Image (tube, rainbow, N blue to C red; front, top):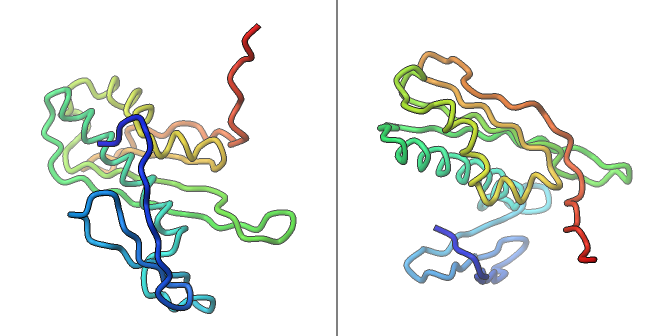
Amino acid sequence: MDTEGEFRIELNRLEGFRFEVHFPNPAIAPLITDEGAPVGADAGPSPSHLLGTAVANCLAASLLFALRKHGNDAGPLRAVATVRNVRNDKGRLRIGHIGVDLHLAVPGASIQRLERILAQFEDFCVVTQSVRSAIPVTVRVIDSAQTVLAMPPIVAAGPAQPPPADR
């Protein structure tokens, strides 16, 4: 689990737009990243793919933690991220929205303290809360009966607000 402080990730260019990523824990195998064609060779996930993955993974882990904390057996959990690319006013490609569906393997009615879990789990997702200041992120939690248990309203993203100045 991430803690306060900093960490370093090292990237070394292999060829073209392909990079080998090294993480702080030497037990974690290096990851190969690349840009999609025609810029790169699609030899690995792109930075945009990794951002969508990071948001979805963090949300799934946060929901899993909350479920377990309240004595629930989460069973298999599936996260599906949909990343929407858009063009800004200068015509440059940007990520305009990330939608994440979290699929539970159990019915919502069988989950203890469901309302509390749904009300709080997103607040503990470091990545999503950090990204939301610039990119809208919507989250749906869907149970085994395909019932949408949680879908917060879409809130337009904007720049993070600076802390209040000391007087």
